[in-house]
Length: 456
View 1 (cartoon, helix red, strand yellow):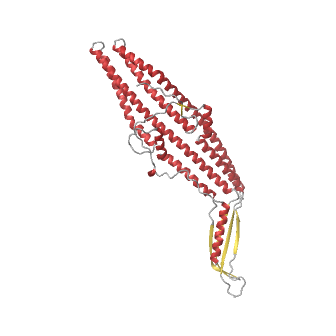
View 2 (tube, helix red, strand yellow):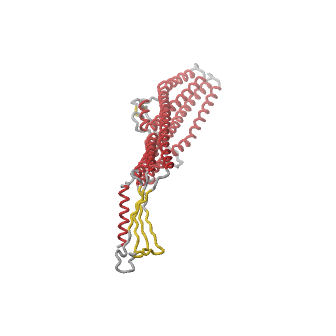
């Protein structure tokens, strides 16, 4: 009977602690279990698109996984912060029995639960929740940075493929020029020096082509690393580049970055966390208290007929933590207030830096658009026409060989500059998406125009 009574008191104490704290609730799982073995990764063959590469990176990049698990770990701190401290159970054995009128006392049992002052648990929960929200935004920011890195590596790989193709076309063109020079030399129209110069130009360009081809392994390894692939397999050449796009106005992009950039949103939640911590520090001057119950095991009295013989004394206890060290607690509050101000200033400084990055990215994006238009619609068609005219004039003996070589060099450089402008524009668009968010309105939307490139 005594054991049943002590068990009832123990369970009553646990119930009181649960009612004080309220249900902590399970932290929501932000994603399904991401087991590597069960992922359906897209196939990266010659038909793979940029979206396939982005999906592959999102599912397989270990850096993004690390950010995800940091977020998950922060979520698990919420129920910990909302819960009461673990209760304490004590047991005392009397080495020498205490003789009383109702019988000797042999042992004592105690149960104690500490309760923070009203509101402290909720504030601790708020601190943990805001920290988890900040980690969620950092995870989103890490995902956007990963997408930018994948696109940057993908487009640079694409540029290498196009530069090799353009250079190969120029090599073929120089072979044709060399053949024309040989025909004219055999006809006695020009000296052998023209043939030699044609061979030298072709050899120089073939060396440039071999250097470009050797670079493929390094750029493929870079793209594999971003995707989280440890394989040394050479990836196939990229299959696509984005079409002509349009972006929102500068004012709209600045407003979107200010509201939706994950890094700034993480700092917003960090500010709220510091404010909740400051409110919690203000409550450090309020006492915490501990409630307890103690039961002393008492045997039957030696003398028969004693009233309350063997009755166990039950005692209720209250312990109060006195926050007497005023200076310490006031310093704690000032520290928390200073952290709030530091978080506010960090947010302002980071926003200024992002706005500067946005302006530079917009300039480079529009500069890339201008160069795409310039080379694709004007310079390359004119250089192609000029080369054709010069080639005919040389065959007819009306142009110098050096003019022909210069026309060929100009077309080659214009072709490479056009491909470079396409890639620069695409990379800068990816940077704008990273700054403003990939779902930002007006970023990366098709303009309805087709990019006009060189006819080859």
